[in-house]
Image (cartoon, rainbow, N blue to C red; front, side):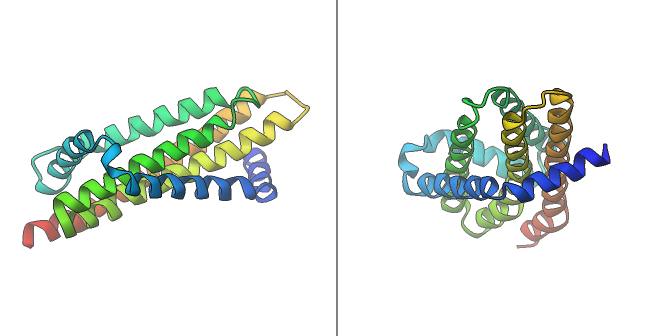
Length: 195
């Protein structure tokens, strides 16, 4: 297990350009989400943003349910990446998924900031952005490993190696959820109740 993880770290260092391309794709999607905010389904975002705000900051909703929803979204993304990793020709579609994730994140940022001003910005930065970045670190690492494994001539234990990489993605998602819960519970809720 540890030899597989150390080989993954070497692979990511060897192909560092792929996570950089992922980051650029995410930023481009984020910028497009901000620029084309009128075409992002603003009303759809505003309904979900208001529900997220009520659950996170007012204390009327369950943080466990909020966290489970975010974890379920991340698991669905990991499942999509896992399915796309079985063919070298489908791997570029992962960039489309990351671009769309950035696009949605940009639309959510605009919605939170326009609806709730400073508290919306704080909620977006400390809850949404940090959790999404943790999740996307796992996705970028998995996509890099899947690309390297698809170029590899040895097909021995291919599923096992991909599942171990998915385990890393799941740990990144859990780290993002814990960061989100800590930020909401110990910082954002007390600040929003006092001000």
